[in-house]
Amino acid sequence: MHVEAVKSYLLQLQQSLCEALAAEDGEREFIVDTWQRPEGGGGRSRVLADGAVFEKAGVNFSHVTGASLPASASAARPELAGRGFQAMGVSLVIHPRNPHVPTSHANVRLFVAEKSGEEPIWWFGGGYDLTPYYGYAEDCVHWHRVAAAACQPFGADIYPRYKRWCDDYFYLPHRREARGIGGLFFDDLCEGSFERCFAFMRAIGDSYLPAYQPIVQRRKTEPWSERERQFQLYRRGRYVEFNLVYDRGTLFGLQSDGRTEAILMSLPPLVRWEYAYQPPPGSPEAALTDYFLQPRDWLLAE
Image (cartoon, rainbow, N blue to C red; front, side, top):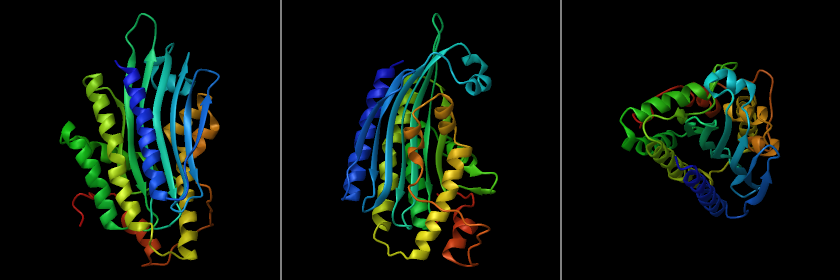
């Protein structure tokens, strides 16, 4: 098990993501905030704010350690009780300014639970998903084709399985709707060797920019109105609701006394809620929930 190799890759991934996103924005750079966690470990948060393209983009690296897991984690996985842990990963959330550019999230991570005299328990997790406000079928098809190509070397069943898991995971039961058009989600990945699982995590991390950047380049100059801006802010509320109520990473970070500023980095700078809002029938706003947020096989869409 080569934990240091994983850490080195994650730091390199954070750097390459920030360089590419800052170049795409063209106006702002990422500020760097290095922090230490009193209970063990630390991280490096990088945030671009109020840019020309990205209203907020956060790319966070963390490597935290602890003598014991939060009670909720131990209850879910009894075999982890009494073990120390280390968790490392890169997570990013991008909130563009233009309502025609989708919000995007990605995460790749490694978790290791250790106990003296016993073999460590480890697994990888991660994935990425796309949250449009105004839907474009070609963007959805491109996103899923890149995701499928990244999974293909690891087995024909990988993309369909992790695509379905993503659809199931990024779902708001209280709204009875998906958060976005999905992508990939995997967790508890420990099938086969550590090296093969690490290779899969790298494939997903390395495919993120080819999946997202062409969409940004196509949409960032689309004209938009105040009506579209207000709809974007309204739909951002769904993003906030999911992250604060359901997201495993957010809950684990808060329950393990993580750094709140880094954990909540994913939240948008501006958001609004409107009581009992209903988009006009047949409008682009209605098409988002009526068509784009419905589960479908985007590889077959044209």
